[in-house]
Length: 179
Image 1 (cartoon, rainbow, N blue to C red):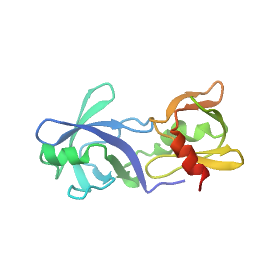
Image 2: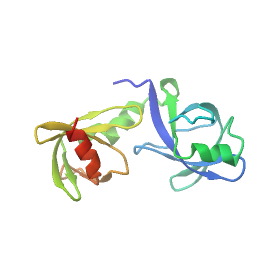
Image 3: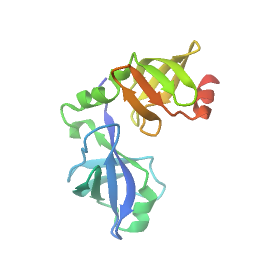
Image 4: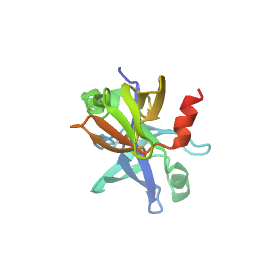
């Protein structure tokens, strides 16, 4: 499935008084933001910019990068954008982007989803590619349950055993079953 946009990074925190951010890649991707790229923020803020250009990128070690954007000129504006995700258009993505995503998510189709508290949830029958995150489609008690394939929920992917260990809020599972 060819995507028109891709979620590639999250703004984790502000840095300094001039509106710079600490940013990290998402979904197991390498860090893809580069100076000159055009980025859209999601979710959009009421008073902040939605479409910006990257002014600078600096690797600070480990998984963190300092990123500055046009139209984000001070700490107050930057703070309103913390937690936002950075979307890149298809034409800015590397040619092997779909392979990078497949390596991260779609290879778990056919694995078994196991929750830390609830135990076995069921087989993962599909992975739906969505703009913000992939969704695991788990067959549970004759119904399809959609679970975001995000770091907050994924504890471990055991490729040898074919198991995705999760920590899923029970409210999410009950919400799915009431649909």
